[in-house]
Amino acid sequence: MTTELLKNFVAGQWQAGTGEGTLLTDPVTGEALVRVSSAGLDLHAAFAFAREQGGAALRAMTYGERAALLKAVAGVLTANRDAYFSIATANSGTVQTDSAVDIDGALYTLGQYARWGAALGEARVLLDGDAAALAKDNAFASQHLRVPTRGVALFINAFNFPSWGLWEKAAPALLAGVPVIVKPATATAWLTQRMVADVVAAGVLPAGAISIVCGSSAGLLDALQPFDVLSFTGSAETAAVIRSHPKVAAQSVRVNIEADSLNSAMLLPGAAAGSEPFELFVREVVREMTVKSGQKCTAIRRAFVPEALYDAAAQAIAARLAKVTVGNPRNEAVRMGALVNREQWQTVQDGIAALSTQTEVLFDGRQAPLIAADPAAAACVGPTLLGTRNPEAADKVHSLEVFGPCATLMPYRDTAQAAALIRRGEGSLVCSLYGDDPAPLAATATELADSHGRVHVVTPDVAKLHSGHGNVMPQSMHGGPGRAGGGEELGGLRALAFYQRRAAVQASPAVLAALGTIQAPY
Ligand code: NAP
Image 1 (cartoon, helix red, strand yellow):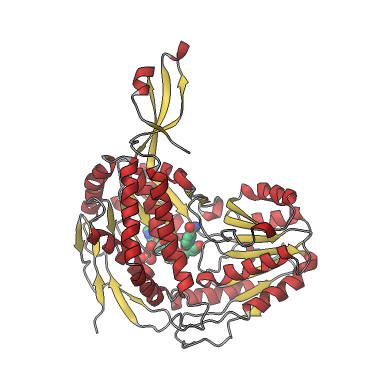
Image 2: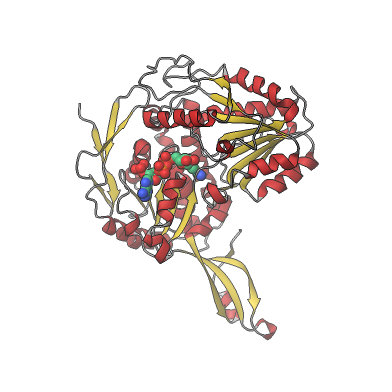
């Protein structure tokens, strides 16, 4: 049976790409699902339509009106939620709870931005800070403003979050007043395309506010103009290509990069084996290794414990990993589904083999039997815990991201050494700390804040209510310095700044008073 060729939505129309396209498959069964193609699209016309029609319509609205658009989008997606879970099972190979991280995470993020935007009400212009005097008695002053950029926001996304990856960017962009064009990763583009199709069919967004290009990225960056912005999520290699593209390098197209990351978890000194902080640490390491089969940019890759607890931690983590059942996500006995495809499966196997040259294997899930899946064809791999007693010498552990269910356990001598080892990740998205003494936890969080976008501190009193090491909450900034890409997303209304231009207006108090109605709350 021929598979459907998914259409692209550009210039206000559904348009099929030319050629056979690229086939998307079920990573467990190998079944052919749908095809995508962006070949032959007039991308310059697509960008011009979004810029001119979508941008003008969004800029004509107040923040409150744009917030209402987000609420309407969330309503459409909620109504179609079941279909999204079916697509995620088939195309991403994820169990329901893992699909929910992507799908419900998007709904939650849209809902938050709708609420925050509604609070800005009738405002059209955001004031940035207070007016600064430029003359005696404040008779002439400088006031900074934030206004939406008159371009499009191009999103180039990674395969692991086809839903959240779109909406965590689109919510602040649309609220800021900027139209979006999304190019999902080819491997899992189906879910993103279906969501956009539902939103378009419901007619809840103005023409040109959202467009989708599925398939190759060829030509997308060439269509960028100086007032456009580009938000990229993906590997460090692709990020480097994007950074050196002439449109970015020579035309100052603003770019946000969310790249890979060797995130850490650290059990602070003072917690005994079996203590509550120890157990919380163990539970979180296991959860992060196994949620979405470890295919989360925020997942724990490096786990640090005081030297005396290395063996106890290895045993406790291994005991929990041994209970993780792996295989076909349609089978209710399965707790962890597949990697995105067999190619990633091979990359993960190669990555574990490379790390194993400098580490010992503390738990090997690779040989465990799969449930309802053919090990020769399915992209399933059991969790693997590696370890080394000599973390200073094991340089690969601090530089190679294995994008799968694998982490490395390491002992540290003292807090200073742990912090130095964590920093060898050269900038990460998140680090989590476990303990029960507030002062050293706060000191370590501050010490590590410069090299992370987020520090997540778990103490026994928040055991049941903390949001999780790897969960990206719209209230907190997502991004990280250095290797993590140097980007910043989310963090409440701070996210709008990327889609806005800041300008100073120098004028009399009367003119400044007439400028805008609301102070930017960030
Ligand atoms: P990837 O191979 O870099 O692909 C990311 C996106 O870039 C895809 O849409 C891809 O399209 C596109 N692309 C590939 N080559 C391109 C080029 N020359 N010009 C423009 N676009 C191009 O990454 P991935 O394998 O999908 O994702 C896994 C990586 O993403 C991991 O390293 C992970 O850590 C990182 N990640 C980071 C975050 C974060 O928020 N920091 C979140 C999720 C994932 P095709 O799919 O069509 O090739």
